[in-house]
Image (cartoon, rainbow, N blue to C red):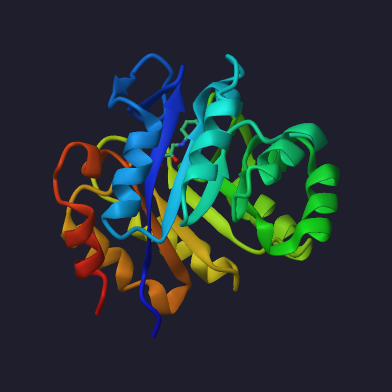
Length: 241
Ligand SMILES: O=C(O)c1ccccc1NCC(=O)[C@H](O)[C@H](O)COP(=O)(O)O
């Protein structure tokens, strides 16, 4: 059985690495330079970085230059998220050299465009399924966007390669991942799932790792690393078995 991939997160707001609570704008805690955080995770052994432009996600601006600088400075794989909703923003995201992009709002509001880019770019496109209960959230998690399993079935039929699944109410709260949500999504698709939001401990990561056989491929970790609940080295060791 393969090992759970870990994706430390760098969420960027107004040029700073921040953490939010439940993805809510205005709840930022700042953790300094995004590049310094990204390099720290790379030096600690990360194979992936989950990099989010929160201003683009919220529609309050863009950190495009900074995102390009961070992605270009790294040797590891980068999953890029936040505000990728049309040809121009997708082209800019892919031009950073990132390994894949994560579409959110577009998958809810522009289904024809998303079907087209899935067909064009295949594995380079993941879709973020950000949910409260089973209701999807878009526009920086501020608007309702349909039912999780309806949208998942549509995206599966269009050949979507991978899903990043977040329980919005766990995100940035250190209350643990929603394991049942992950199981339910894995049961509904054969495509790999990346778990996001809520990880607080090495035991949470070990619990997510038990779902690898069901289809969970990776786990995004944000606040727990920034608040030093454990180190990335410890996290990689915890899921190495
Ligand atoms: O990913 C997005 O596009 C996004 C949009 C609006 C608010 C938050 C968004 N992402 C947050 C993340 O991806 C977190 O980094 C990730 O879920 C880690 O959460 P945690 O480990 O609970 O800090």
